Structure formats: structure tokens, C-alpha cells
Length: 348
Image (cartoon, rainbow, N blue to C red):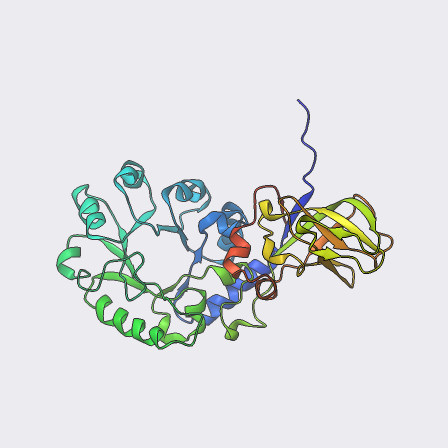
């Protein structure tokens, strides 16, 4: 059987930066335990690998979205806690009842389902204003939840990354509701919530974005390190003559002769069209502009300033998350979780 050739795309993943980001978030969390959201396959970096690196730093609380994600990481947790944020559907029950992971119960139906099956320890989400998952305030009562063994009662901030009065409103609601629920721990803060200060930390924080290099609020600037660096291989180097166009829609017109490198990267890899005419590639101390539109599998980079680059060479793609978000109009979350399957993921 023939060995597959190496991919023409790679993600260089910085384990030291990931660990340092978690340590900073843990310090900011004060006396609260600092967990880690590893849903969406560890924000597309690889949940199993993320778990291994964070376990080595002392993280003992992890969060995924679904039971399929739970099944993927359970063998690698080494006894650490795992919560499934999207609760437990009827279809999930056989697996959930046999699993050491805890469901985060979000609705009266989920509470009733877990009770009727004699389920073990669980978590409970209460909605304090986001109107997404969680028990509404009128239903988050001791009467509804009696008989459950609740490890953590939690909620989620809608505007934690903004200066919004809703943050303090949700905080006050959470304090009032959680006081009447017999849970061992309380948890409200995600990455942005950690930056809001000790009032939001309670017993457990649940960072996600900031672990992977995202900067959720200004307080984190200068403290969070870049974890993900995409690279792409040059498939062809070509000369574009003055007056010629590049790419779909002929949106770029060369005003003089330019040298281009065509890279194996496009929106099928999560490098979306928002980078058209705005993205950058990096080579040594050069910042090389993307010209024309991003297409499904290809982009064109102006390498006139890098005469020695040839077919087969590699270029790093500028992907500092706050800067890339500002350039592309995409959120930092979209940039991370859109990274496709065609990259070789290389932990360093």
C-alpha cells in the first residue's frame, strides 16, 4: 500500500503558548479552578492533543458540546472531569448513563429524563439573559432540581467581551438563582468573563477562545500568545504582466509586472473570502500581500519582493487572531473553528 504524500497545508501549533495561555487564565481566575472548553475538536486544533497539554499543566475540568465529542476524548482524560454542555437527549441516554462524563441539564425535560433514569452526578445550566440553552429563571428552582446530584450550576454571559450593563445584570441574576440550588460549585465566566474580574469567577472558570490565542477583551492584550500558525506550499510561481488580472471576478489588476506565488489554500480550508485583497503571507521579515479573491483551494500572493521563493517553498499565513479578525471581518471564533481537515496539524 502506498504511503500518502505530505499535505501541502500545515498548522504549526505551539504547545508552549497553549500552556502559557492556560496558566495566565488560571492566575486571573484567582481561587477558582480554571477549566478548558475543548468543543469543536479543541477549536479545530485537536481536542486529544489539547487535553494532553493542559492535563500536564494541572487542568482538571473540561467541556465539550456533544456526546460524540465526549466519546472522542474520554480515553485521554486520565480521570479529569468532563461536562457535556448540550445536555442529554433521549438518543444520548444509553451512552450518557454509562459514561463518566456529566450532562449539563438545560431544560425541564432533560431534568425529568435524567431523574427518571436514575442518572448520577450532573451539571445544570440556568439562563440569566442569553436566551439560548438553560433553565429560565422561573424554572430554575430547588423544587424542580430536587433529587439531583448537581456538581456545577452554571450560566453564560451574552456580552462578556463588551462594556455592557448586561454583564452586571446577569451576574446579579446568577447570584440570586444559584444560591437556591444545591450545587457543589458555581461557574459563570468564559474567557471574557475571567477578564471581568473576581466577582465573575465563583468556583470554576471555563475559558475557550483565549486558550487558543484569541484575545476576548483588552485586559488580555499582551498576555495571550498566538498558538496557531497556518502554512501553505507554493504550487506555482508566475509573472503577471502590467494590465493583466488575477482570480475570479478580475478584482485585481496589476499596474506593472508582478511576481505571484499560488498557494494551496482557500475557503474550503477555512481561509474565507473576507481575506480577499486583505490577507498577508509572511516570509522572514517580509509581509507579502494577497491579491485578488480567495477561491476554494487557491490564493495568490505577491512575492515580487522575494525573488528567491520557488515552487515547493512554504509561506506562513498571517493569523494572529485579533489582527486577522479585524482584516477579514470574521470573528476570532470563526477563524479558529473554520480550520479544515486538509491541514497537517504539527504540535511543537
